[in-house]
Image (cartoon, rainbow over all chains, first blue to last red; front, side, top):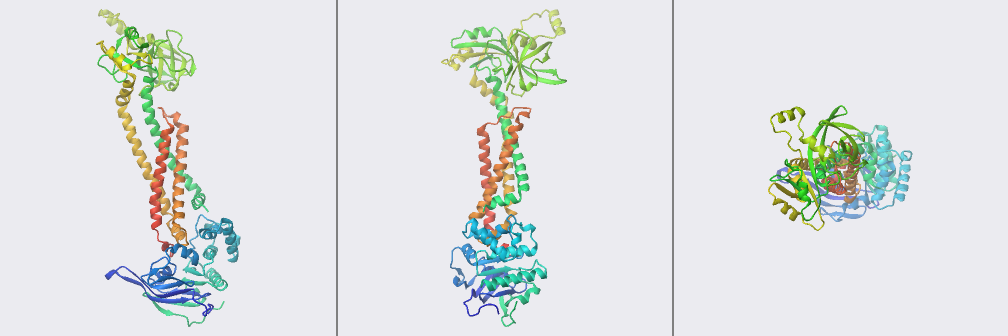
Length: 243
Length: 377
């Protein structure tokens, strides 16, 4: 496993449940799910539709209130007995979490550099600092030559790399990815996964991806299988991925 | 980083087209306001141009504009002798249709006594009437050039001067001529009809009839008092200038004024709904981007600011286009379009408020967006 198991986990989810509706209409999206993800790990959440993987990703991303359970992010207890301990979850997301989307979700009216710089400016960086850091990140992800391109002019792989740069902008140690390779062919999917691996190892980040993409299953350190809201298999025993 | 500006710049052509459409709509609203004001101003122009204080008309009428009025021409001498009156003049009004330039020309003929109240208020080109016959001063909107000759009745007149903004309440351009010419034009019978009258033994009646006598008072004289003293002559009625203006706006052009006023109000409501729809649609199109912005940590105020700035930019640019358009084409309207600064400012304020309220709808929708919708296809 690439992750450092002897370090404290970056993400610790403890008996988190989430249900929607009440009575006969009640749907249990998550039932007592507990997972730990360590720095440097790249893990996948896998399961059929309605299994609860996106719900779990939303809870870890602090955009969905769970019904019960606790959660620590980067050493900070942020959720206890189903209640958020921070009043401003927006700030929590800005500080600790980066997001990568299935269709990159770049802001269409900003060029590649400004898409990355925007996140830095939202966190309070001045325009020059934000731009410098954005250019560094684009170079780091080997898409610096497209710094002035608008999202519509980027290829799928380039756009996803810019999206990864945006996710990394504020140096979050937790990166959540929703089907990051679904819109890419095998070759580009492999490149994106290599980049995510590079980020996880070099920045000691934890990367959690929801995916159905079988061609990249072997790129994950661990795969958590979810079924009917429960963690069915914690695939920690599988042979770890070696790049 | 100004997101509103970046979004506009990215979709500049589309934004400009939207502004242009809104500008045309606001231009129509401005034009209607201008036409409404123009109607009122036009209605009052002829009544105000002699700069007098009292109108003397036929008894039991509200002439000479709202009702027909005929009084003897020598009434003027009697009025001039009333205490407080500094000047009095006889006036006739009539609408004629003349052939000119291969087409029909409707004119509002005003007959006045030279050197007395009732003549054109200013000459913008040419000169005042200098001869007792066959000269006239025309309003520019009649399209008559200086020196042009036009046949009215059985006489041909030469245009010796041009004035401006002198139109009747119906929009017909005014022409000023001597009282004698106007009386001849209005009251002379055609030769064949005159011969019949003479044969019947009723010919030769005096044509010294006028529609009204106007009186200018001393600054300290009371118009009401003078009017009351004139009313004592049973064959005359006297109307103060204030009352005459009221008759014109409340009676003569009232229906047209209310019609245009109502239409303008409806147009304003339609504009407000369209502005609201445009801004709401602009926001709804960006919901996915807004969800993404919220997810990556953008504060609500950044999103609110983006929507409000775009709404105000749309309103401001649209209003500027509309105002610019109407200012530049208003003189080509067949009737006067009066754009007063305060009317334009009030409409601008209304557009500002509508944009603000409309952006409120968009903001409400944006704030309700769940950041989680940015995840997933």
